[in-house]
Length: 419
Ligand SMILES: [Zn+2]
Image 1 (spheres, protein in one colour):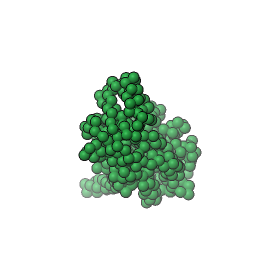
Image 2: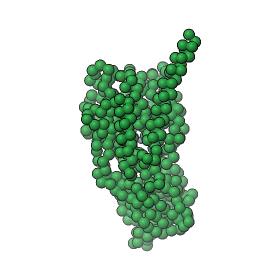
Image 3: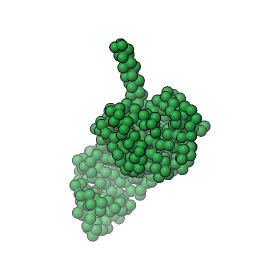
């Protein structure tokens, strides 16, 4: 009896281990330099897409129509080559010492800085006077805004002023917090940087050399895979996760996007594996979206061109930021779908899974959003934990704990069973 029990336990733990190894293997690959941060430089998104399709095939999931791919186009600003910003002898590192505004123009410039503080920025006469002195030679001058420590209200007043000045000359903002980068959909007329206050030297000429390129109608793709139900069923459950990230800030720096959202993409694939081995009474449609970081572009396109009528979707679960979980998970739209949220909590309690299943109202913060807008019942689930890296170069595979991976998948599998 004892040995049987032992065997049973070993059996169970190998299943769990193999899945956690799978999620680690897939996440690591998605974060590797060959995928270029799954953005638009070197077609990183498309390299990732090909890999994900192969993984879906390995699992045994089918394309819903003839192809796994749903093509769409978007216009993006990219930084494929040179990315240098120096002051004197000091060479700043992209992503660490400085960050370029996602919509910045590139070019090779030597810029003389004029620093202004919060008080000066808000003094419109002072700024007008300053601009009339330096604004006539916009390609050799840069306005450096230092409003570190300003109150929230002051920052709110300062932001539109900086935005306006950025339309007439190069600008720099000094910051004392970690950078948060994103994807630009257009290009401004002048260069625009953020620099860490700790490395910036007042009055010292800034030398920049940046390659910035807008790609019009860049072709990207959602990936759609399908598992039909055990017995014929009219209803479908959707699992979704975006696989794109921010790509490269110059040829030598990329954003691995491990937590956001290689982790969710990998979980999507391991969920597909589970449901292939244990067919559900519902059909299951898996969609890995592209263009999320550019403004939920891929999911918007999907909801405008669904492969399956949206009203046939019984429920959608969007996975984004699944790499930790020490403090539990948050459920966006929990307030909209009370009954389903209570089901999640009930399962969590019954199996003693996560520290917390937190409720949150609707938010336009990931791909579930367009589905919610079109009346598809949906949750967006993200993990809460020790990992605080977000949209920065530190969001690496090595920083992920996947500490609650097994419990989250257990929760979701049981959720589908009881829906
Ligand atoms: Zn994300």
